[in-house]
Image (cartoon, rainbow, N blue to C red; front, side, top):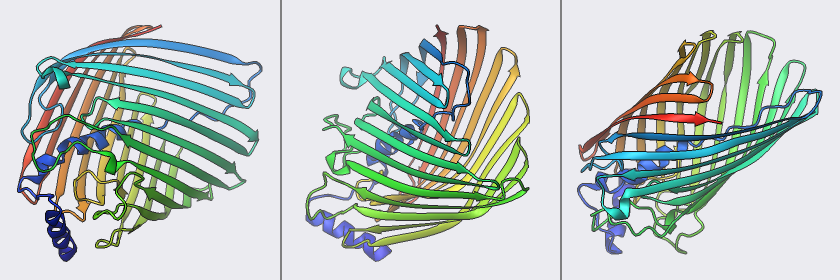
Length: 414
């Protein structure tokens, strides 16, 4: 491992890619971009139930928020700013016998009032379409896609994600077959982050498409102990990297999870398994990587007002460093959703991440927390306060940074 990393650094220097001592600064913005986009999860359509007649809904909203962010771009040399955000969108749906169609549109504009003009105006736009069909009493099929134009991160990009999901519910088992595709196409970013050697702004060499096929089997669904298995195979193609590139990130990946679900009742279940990841790279120096770890997912709803979820997992994600081929990530997280009173809702999250760059000498530890408190003034008006705290250490160089954010706003639903 160390020989491969040293060799890569020497080769990179030969081509004029200078390795800087403070390499952590050079990748922090790109890392945050990856973290923020993880929040754009696909919300699959619900499986439609039998309805007597079609029903339709159309729910537009508008939201405004103002606050302070100590480090919006997650830099080791941080730059603070106040901000004002304006967001608007809508959710529309049609439910028919055995069918569901949903459309979501969302746009945001953020003004960082203390930044220079070229980086003070940020925005993004998302459009999502989701459908679901009841094929038979035991079978359902879901498919959908979203498009996200991310102009909030300094590493700007278009993202397209699509999925198809077939599910069969047998007498005492459930089988799911899933296919999905994820594309990230980076802009020719021209924002100067002040680093003459490595730009943390991602360029076209990081454009990629990932295609996955997955089989998921859950057995003995009427029992307390429910063994399960998940097998996933994918192809990752960096379609804009130079032919014969020194760092070749094209790869194939497989992972498998085997374990048991302990279902105490419909409001409390624990999935405990063991996961093995393997990625085979086309790179000439760093050829393959294999990892294994426990995999835990907990859901608990002790009453109608409280939901608690927790995860422990290890997975591979696309790289966030200049010389990395991928990131080996270990994640530990908990979420609490608590309806404090009929008009008050509290949501808190805590996540600890260990991210090791494969093929690069960078090793990150991250702690991220969020808190949000919402007050329903009436059926169409919400008032909220939200906070974020983040602490990051790059263990090789010893560099650290933190980020604190607080905002308050109003959401109007029509």
